Amino acid sequence: MPLLRLSLVLLLLSPALCAQVAKPTLHEATLHEALLAAHADRAGDPGVATAFRHLAKTYGTPLYIYDQAHIRGQVDALHAAFAPRFSKLRILYAIKANTNPVVISLLKAKGLGAEVVSRGEIETALRVGYAGPEIMFTSSSKNPGEIQRAIELGAVLNVDSLDELGQVQAEARRQKKQARISFRINPGVDPHTIHQINTGIAESKFGLHLQDGIAFKAYEKAKGMPEIRIEGAHCHIGSQITETDGYVLTARKMLGLVKDLKEKLNIKLAFLDLGGGLGIPYEDGQTLMSPEDLAKALEPVWKEGVAAAGYEPTLWLEPGRFFVGGSGYLLTRVNTVKQTPLKTFVNVDAGFNTLMRPAMYKAYHRVRVIGKTKDPQLVDIAGDVCETGDILAEARMLPRAEAGDLVVILDAGAYGFSMASEYNARPMPAEVMVDGNKARVIRRRGTYPELFRNTERATPTKH
Ligand code: LLP
Figure: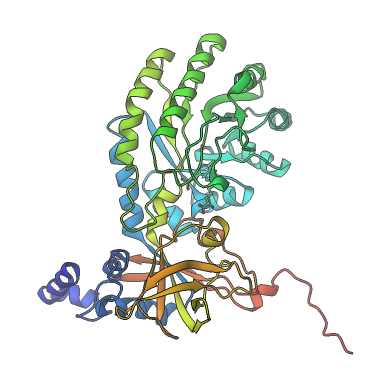
């Protein structure tokens, strides 16, 4: 395989590099190459297997592994598609996708702002060095403490209802400050994605509907409030979107609002945020819109819309999954293999407590068996949670695996660890960041004492 051969040649040619790259040894792939090779369905190669075994031995399983180069590459790809077409552009990272501070720092270093959905995410963003004004706070149900904190920090509050607008006004008055706001708008657009992550349709709980002038009236009301500074309009129509049509329709509707606000209320917005939601390929051979496709499709609608409005707000985008999803690998070990009259189960040491997406959304994640190529079998990869629904991958033809083998689940970088839990009293997995041939722990594995960290110490009962 060319990559491995390339690394071998480089290592042989460069004594300096040899000194740096002590592990793995010559016949092995660098860690980064091994991750790419697993993605490209070459997880059976011995050099690739050595790299994964090294990771499993050093850090244990289940283990989240992220590839730094992938994350950076995704930001560059989005930027390359949009920056030449949209001169006023700001990109934020929706940190809920992966809240590891090291991951967020990487994205911050690339110049991205932070989109957060809770007080915990606000604190996370501050911890990695974001200033309050760089933060956008979106949630359809903010508690009073969250509203207070966001106003204190000068973050943009993405207001979701008239009720919330009143609360934000009252808190701003109390703080003798102006609250910076945008409204989250429900444009009533169906981007054709998984039901649970479809957010811009009329029946969704999110946002103020464009329909019946509801959103317009909210701006009208806010305009009369001295405690409120209107900065933008926001929408987010869903997640794992694979086609451009929904975005185009949304942009058209939102730009219509921008025009109306200017013409009828003389409100000029600093930004129009079209949300996140850019899908990634989860299946081999899957084709879906690229950032380039999306930017190209939006460009004429945007130009037309801003010409009609008579000014250009900054275009904001706030993807999460697109940046981090494909960077993540969930490495897990086979505990047992069991044949039942109906199926073969490969029972691994991760479950829906580690990666919830398959159980929750019937989401498909590719699976690779490490270091094995022979004797393909139709199997279910079953988790270690005591529930029937804990199947990580269903009906897959995979090389025969046995107890002790490693299995890697791909594209687990978004909504993987961030949705994980200690259900079944299993400590949280570790997270490791790979940079070339180096790996470092960016979150240590949870411990058994941590399972009891916030509980009262129960006294053993005597019978
Ligand atoms: N902005 C807002 C307001 C959001 O609610 C979300 C995601 C995003 C941005 C980022 O969306 P992304 O670019 O990552 O698609 N747990 C689900 C996904 C839920 C997304 C929730 N909102 C999953 O595992 O597929």
